[in-house]
Length: 620
Image (cartoon, rainbow, N blue to C red; front, side, top):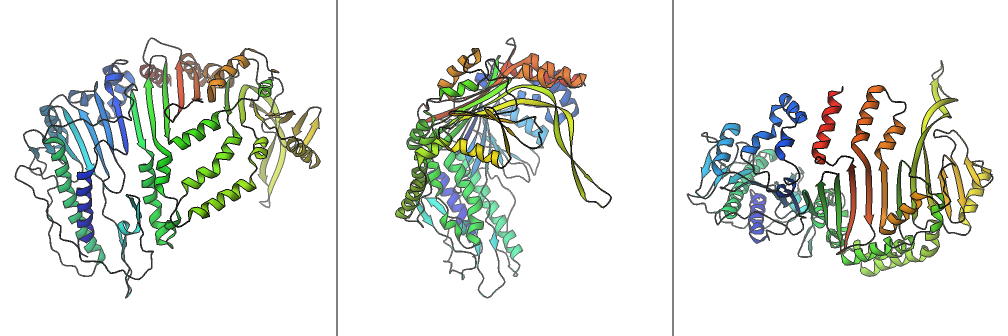
């Protein structure tokens, strides 16, 4: 079996990469320099005082040295694959000229010396730094950093008469073309291995770049030491991997390099990223299916990874940097079945009684979440049935399990315990005397617990939700009274015991349950804040906001003077932090947005943030 695994994997890599659709990536990251450069001058960022101060201490961090070779006002991309077939990554960077790159590599990385030669191949040049596997290739327009990341599988040896040899190729299931190849379980008798096929050596002409230059002896003597055999196989594997990497670079450049692109990327964002969810799950499976195969072959019972990929097609993270805000938009692309389910779960008419326990004026911060719990419970069994399909389980077996769940769980009755309305509020802070526990030890080293009153600044908060079950809530509260966990006082209940956050109250008013440490902020459904919030929640399944200025003022009352000055500086810079998620899905895509809003609009928020950081550090 000498060299069999390495030759087989190299053949698979070469064949697969030749067949791969170059527009099919597992992940894609794009820095839209053409978009961001319209908003902020990159030289203002790189020459900002806080950056130059840091560079003076860390010269290696000086990004300004790259501006002489990189066109930062154009698109820079990172893409690749983490699937088992052809794992690789590729950086694609627009450059100002071929000679500029060559000069930089010569000065910074010692390129051009005898052992670190730059290969000039006419249309493009190639350089592989000594001791690394990644290749740098460039023409007059683009610099590419490329590496095949396939690794030689580890082999496990048993010094017995029936030695089992298992590697990660055999142990991990392959889900290619919907065909599953099962691996032998650890400890099975040795399985006869066919003679390795004869694989032709890749032909390399005189003009082809040879990226990996370390010579490897084709034949070697094996003296019985597994480590020595593995070392020789690793060297052979690396050599052939480098040859294939060289062929790929040639393929990219010889007929004119075309910059990669993806329809999944949002060109309107300043930085846009996309990841193939199915590919990501495949990598996850590769990580845990091997150990499960070794310990009894339980990997056979795992849900098939392609099912997860069928449900969630991909996930985007897009970043925007404007003058008045910075925001992140997460976009999850579902399959039609999941999108229909998510739409129904988010389609909830809010119980209007919950607004009676909203504050009349804007709190420091709040978050409100409203879903259709009944729809979620109804969709759950069928979704799990599809997701956990596995050839080891008959479809009828899964159907029995889902029917059992549906029978045991009464969706309509269960949903009434928690209908789906949930809101949380941070009103203010207050200094109170609270009972707290103090732990100490006596002379016999036995723990003593005592209670004492201390003054403490606590946040005033409430959590409000709806429950339309006719009896459960009242019976649960009365149980708390009987067990002396709760004390009833008029129309509210007080939780007994120590009070780290003051007195905690529970109020139940028909369909609404409120848990709070204050009774002063409930509005009975009136006030400007209630009207504003109804409008926001009518469009969003999730909505929340934190008022930065008011929160800093409230929590900074007892801060030291230096800390208070810094907090006030933040409060004067940024107004609030918001989150929202629209109810309506567009093209089966769910969106979640986080936004930091600025009080100043005369400068890009990147420069504003650097200014703020510089002032904070200078004031030390």
